[in-house]
Image 1 (tube, helix red, strand yellow):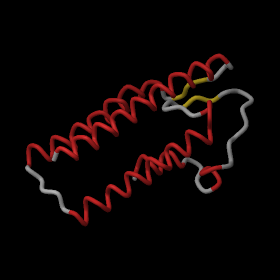
Image 2 (image 1 turned 120 degrees about the vertical axis):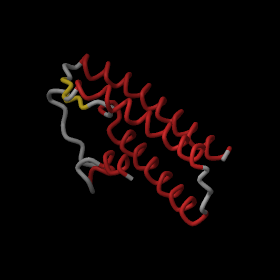
Image 3 (image 1 turned 180 degrees about the vertical axis):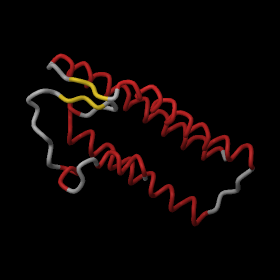
Image 4 (image 1 turned 135 degrees about the horizontal axis):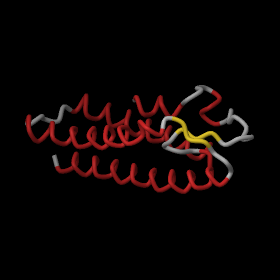
Length: 128
């Protein structure tokens, strides 16, 4: 159980790192006239993502869920692949990447990296 709590803590730390990158990129986008869409739902998304991580830990603690190797290791592989895809998105978009939906006037659509295969690969990673 300790290793699971550490994994969730690592994921939480990674999400905080994403928020730091996002805040920096948001300032960059706004300085270039970037317009945010869906700002009203952003706080709910932050709560949802935070609650999801907390619920993962609470489920194991409250219901005494055992580690099932076949399920556990395969899901760890899915988490690792999803994180790799998320950071590939971050690297590909560079300063245009954000946890918010921000459109910078005149910025061209990115169509390389994972965006060659999916219009919104970051959402694929989030759903995984």
